[in-house]
Image (tube, rainbow, N blue to C red):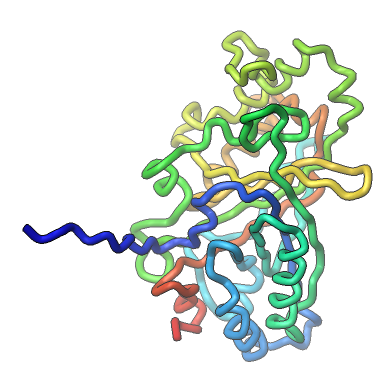
Length: 314
């Protein structure tokens, strides 16, 4: 009998999206150097950076404006909407190109950042950098927010995660790609710490002590506002959020990958109270300061598949 092959089946997506949260990460936003940068210069820069993007240690996403500048059309990709409602502000900060650098040592990630920066120059310049880290509030814990609550508890796993996070049925050059929403949230930790234990749990909708969902939590509880199975259609995303800090400011870098932007938009609209006027309690202890969409191209033969951008795979 012929032995079964042990060669792993190549997946068409950037593997870092599926692999989970690393010990440390860098989020790097790039912008075009100036208005004179043309399509040829953009393509040259992307061609130079492609060998550095293995999709695992370096995950890359292109903003809608960059795709448009290349004369390309990616199905379901559009700019980040304005979810603000009344006095509740949800900032829109369109992005050009975004990199999620993943690793175990921030010093190493600095050097990777410099390599990517040099490959993209002079067409692109760095606009914003945020360093993230995995936080375990208690021994044996996984990824926790700085409030102590576990992040991504309801993440789909296995085939369900692949179904939620990656495009499929849209054709070559699109299937395996992912649509990511990126928001930087700043926590008001003083306000959170001023709450009693029960109030903290009810803000989130889970008990901090054991991460169990609270059935009779108020309708403002974050878990109730974003219950993925409660939407029609269901709104599952693959969260890959990480805490960040800079001096005495800190919060959560919210990152959600989807087969389109639809699921994220369903959740964000409900959080802001567009559906029923009820605002997520999360806004009482944290505020988003950025918001942008990016398209993360698929992989082919171990390299970024940029054929839909007119670059092909060399």
